Image 1: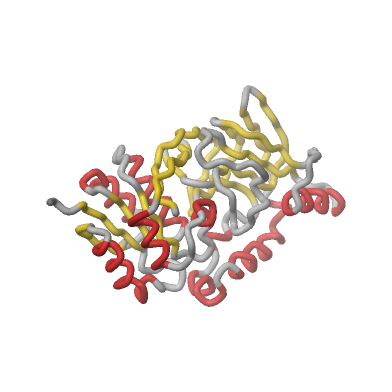
Image 2 (image 1 turned 180 degrees about the horizontal axis):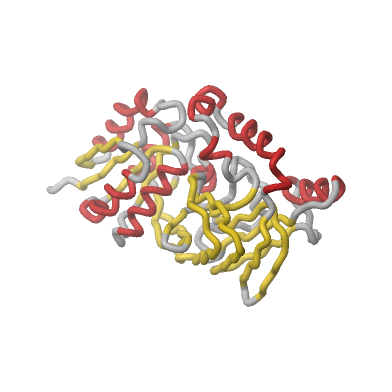
Length: 299
């Protein structure tokens, strides 16, 4: 009987590099599950996308290990290669937002068992102009924290490193305002915004309340949230209360909705992040939801 084939791709630099300690145990799980395993450590930024786009359909299962950025590269590669191969994920980053949404544990051996033996669930994928993202596209303050934070600081402090970088960026709030035109659900909204995100996740930046309630990963809809420029401390306080202690009532300082397609326009280039990695600067952005495009292994 021919053995099933599994391609295991991992980022040796993610998180604190703990994958090196657990690598033998992870591979043992895959072999005991009956797989013939091919192992590939990524060699730099964009490498996972290149490799996966070329080989994903040659395997019965793809498993990746790394942070949100590594997962984003693998999913992008699967989209580019038009692959429908089931995907397992062993989180090894600092925040691991999407692993929380999938309820995949941080213990690598347990996550490997799920990747090998778990159940299949479909998940939506976002298209951002000519790129792809798995759980969030964001612009404005704080969004640079994930890719601007010193890697050594991430290794030492973990998630606290992002908080430190985010606090540092607060001093630039007056200069990080964008005059945006947002189109969603046949509605056009204009204003000056300091932050915006289009997400498909239960957690963003390690904060579960930020995305709102009733989030489904396979409903074909994004959670859209844009924060207007606050004019005084009272407005800042109201915004913070709605972000971190969601209430039933609305606030005029936050525009939010659910939509399968969003367009954002600005007269100047706006820096964006896709799944925590720099996504370039864009004046015009079109974001489309691809319904249940990727199948994940979950417990």
